[in-house]
Length: 247
Length: 247
DNA sequence: CGCCCCATTGAGACGGCTCAACTTGCGTGG
DNA sequence: CCACGCAAGTTGAGCCGTCTCAATGGGGCG
Image 1 (cartoon, chains in turn brown, yellow, green, blue):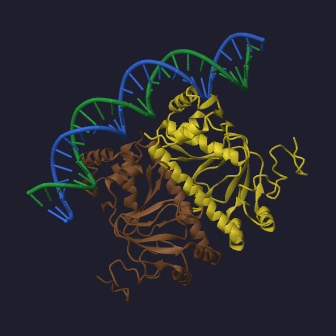
Image 2 (cartoon, rainbow over the protein chains, first blue to last red):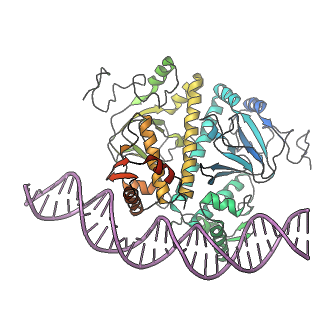
Image 3 (cartoon, each protein chain N blue to C red):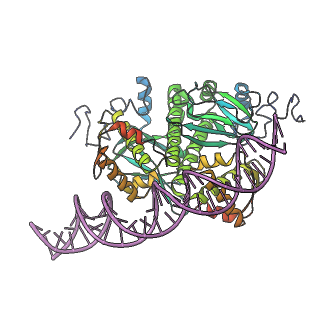
């Protein structure tokens, strides 16, 4: 179970022993493109905690904003709750991805954050990150870039929700997940979805029935193979085309 | 025509004479909550240019990212173009609002930006703003906050597109515009829409016909009065309720 | 074994889209 | 000054994709 690379490993989610320097996500995550000695400074402010169980909340909308988080293992969703109880999932986060930016403005978290699987996260106290960003220009730059990327992703999502039909939306999600898996050197064609049909439907503005029917249709057309949460992408090219299907 | 407050005024869009210190948008815009001497430092890197005509582009997606922009007068829209030519308006920007954040990540602008009316903008070269942010902690903080706010706005927009019906979407846009007008001490109940029905439909994921019918219905129910682009909000409370109408 | 939850599938309803006709306002040119 | 064309908006009729409601299937767990 213990990782031979890490000399103080205590469990298979690797929290106590972790450091950015030997983290295999450092090429994706916050330390991207930083000097070794700067990574050590960043490392010293990062806190790693015990794993979060699936269904457990990391924090909720309205709580005082203190930290941003990097996903270390597992998977996480963020969601809004409207005045009258309508929920909207605003994103799924996989290892190496960073969340919590939406709390900076009001000093309260804007989203609810819950683990989909058993997950571990790195907590980065924002005020210390801010101080460090004043001292390390590449960190400040990188932080701006991460927020900018989130804005771009949201813009793409607006287009998806506004212009695409059910097939286009589902295909777009699958391609996005596939790309994010392959960035982590995992297979781009075989994946286990971390979220339920309910979550997919909520995220994409569809009912679970429509999501289910769409999966079935894509399977019948031999573009994907689906077995519950296991998805195989058979025909990547056609799936890419379907991403652009409009209403 | 010339503004008596500004001693070198040359036109009613006020570009050459402008400075943050005497700008009546400073309470909304980038200088928010900055010291006077820091505002002067910010001011010194900001460039003001000639007015942009309605329909004229400020920049296009793919061009090299150099600056962010604050709207000084008029109104501006940003939009994406998909691989196969589908356009999605990603935002409308009114005086005091800031755009261009989406270019930081890739060092290319992500959106196309075009003026809806004759407009003026303040151009803020990003690399100089970055340098200044390292020296002025409140500026760095404020910059983070502005990007965070954009992320939060986008999340709200995802909810709107994913969960609301046509009435809910149109009402949400009207309330948003109303709030932004009143922040500028303008009437929250009487406004002239800067964008066409086409733009509204594109932004909200509806056809122009549906937008038009929705305006007509809201008018028949005496919630608003519409005359082309002139809109009066008659019953603010009911319009607020309609914002939450789901599919 | 039986219960519950999640997913799938089918049948019918409905909101928004498509297509088309008509109106209105505005700029151009006779 | 009016005639004309053009762009933008409104309104109506019919269609289609997704939702709603309901029944069924399958896997995990007490």
